[in-house]
Length: 74
Image 1 (cartoon, rainbow, N blue to C red):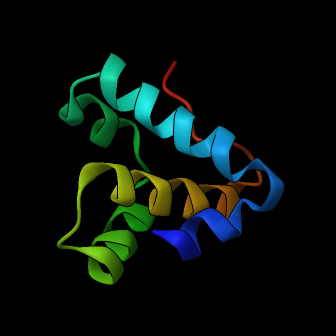
Image 2: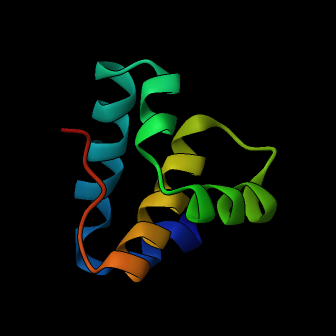
């Protein structure tokens, strides 16, 4: 998980807290439904098996790379 946090640089702690909060606030299936299919599958192939927080952080990094914005559930 440390390499994922390194991706976020000075904002690593903020993104770790954001991932934890998202998991606490939403059922996992809701979070997954908001994910981009391609990024979710790439993340799964690269990180599974892992815990939900690690998966979400990896997904958030992929989402930021692809779309240039934070992953959010609206």
